[in-house]
Figure 1: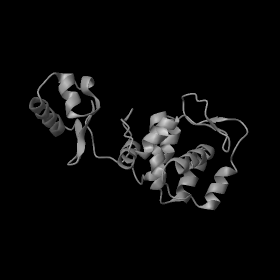
Figure 2: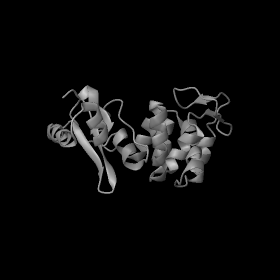
Figure 3: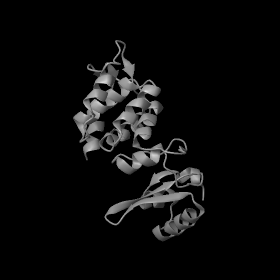
Figure 4: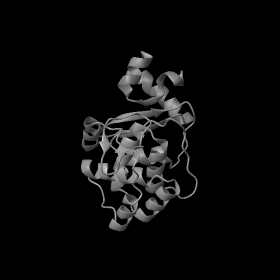
Length: 198
């Protein structure tokens, strides 16, 4: 079976259409690939099963994409294999998503603000990579769009003090929407933000 052809997040119906096989035949092939380590499964019971199919063997890791997909309603297919060694938590995943500057990854990462436990660590990581303004802008956007935990006032004020006069682009894609408070280009449309609430 050519894994390149079916790579990505797929449902059983999609795979039946792509491979032009019956459901049971596809399930048998998926079972073989899962034993070899190319497939991981999420969902089940009341939810639709989603098969994550990759061309490389999947290992149990706790990288950025794993954390984002665990906490976000919008799932992200990894564009590369992200493996973290040592202590790697929600704060690190949020910072790495901002550094990646990918629109879909950033949109999915907005949900992580509701699970941040160590705001000081998040602030120190943002300072280390000089992305305090982007972090503050995304936090405000998440706060207006979905339910999030409140950031301590002293950390919020320290992020606010780093605001610059030139417009900062959060994502690689150009955007017309600018957050005037932070002077950042916001790469999301209103429809994107509504998807977070669903």
